Image 1 (cartoon, rainbow, N blue to C red):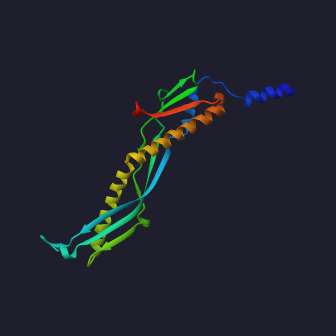
Image 2: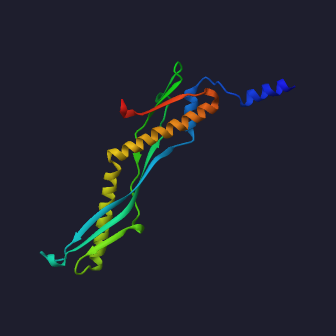
Image 3: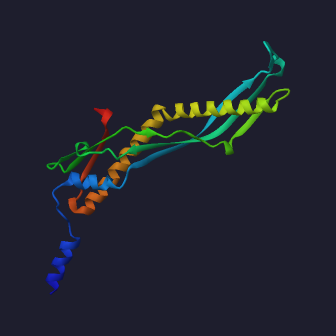
Length: 192
């Protein structure tokens, strides 16, 4: 009786050899459409000026300037919905699963203007000038946040985080599925 129970337990919870490690790896991604692998929060400085004018005449003495320091957040994501069998290569001899990832996508910067700090300089700042300066600074802040998000050092950190996340998201389920200590190597398609 004990032998029969042990055999049933082994069949139910013991290692499973389905023979298709690529299928098992793809199953680990099946429920995930997109995976946020890295988030970067930083501060952006934007500055605008406004010079009042009447017709063709500008009044330089009444020029106003506004600087804004605002927190921004961007997220780096992997779209896993298009991952196919061709993105996975299994080398049985070395027990290595090679995974080729699609490019990272970067979210639209989230500019948190509720936490912005404003510094205004000028003799007189009209309401219209203040609104115009704020709009201009918001646009400039978003442009600068996009530039920061494309920075090679930040992009490298995001890609490293993506490789580590995918490696972990595959190694553990494959180990639980009974494939043992599988080595997972992850690269991006543009790495050649």
